[in-house]
Structures are given as C-alpha cells and as structure tokens.
Image (tube, rainbow, N blue to C red; front, top):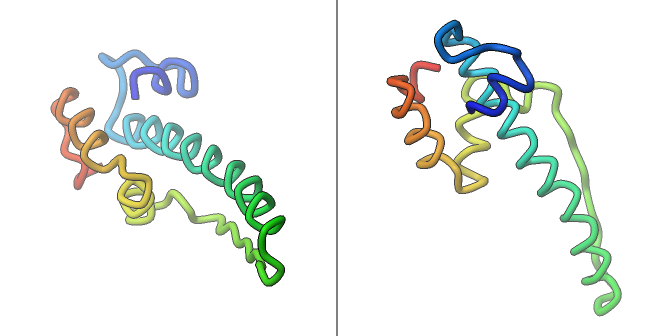
Length: 97
C-alpha cells in the first residue's frame, strides 16, 4: 500500500484519505490479478499440448475492483489476511475501506 500511495497516487501517508488507501490497495490487487491472468494462458497452452479437448473462456469485467469485488479478489488471490494486516498497520479496517 505504501508503494502505491507514493507511486500511483503521489500521496504521503500523513495526507492520504481513506479513499487513497482503498485506491492503493486496489492498485496492488490489480497487479496481482494481471500477473495471474498473464500466467493462465501459458499454463493452458502447456496443458493443451497434452490434451485435445481443452477450451478457454475469458471475461474481464470493468467493475473487477469495485466495492465488495476488491475483497473477493483478495480472498481468491489468498491475500485477504495480508491486506487486513497492512490496513491494521495504518490503523484502518479493511471492512471500512
């Protein structure tokens, strides 16, 4: 969160609002999602070489990181506890972001 407060939002922690912290967390989560999305087709391609009936369906929603979707993505990435700990370090509650 500290990295994205500075590099993505140009904010210092002393001037950051609750929305800024949310945006910083969303930026970090988006990078993790993109990493997963980039790796998935490569893994499917390797699997296709060994199997004949493999299909891929892709869907990207514009609201991927909005509201409850951010926490859902954190859970799916296995990052929810780390995000809650990071929020706690900033005296924030992940549920309130």
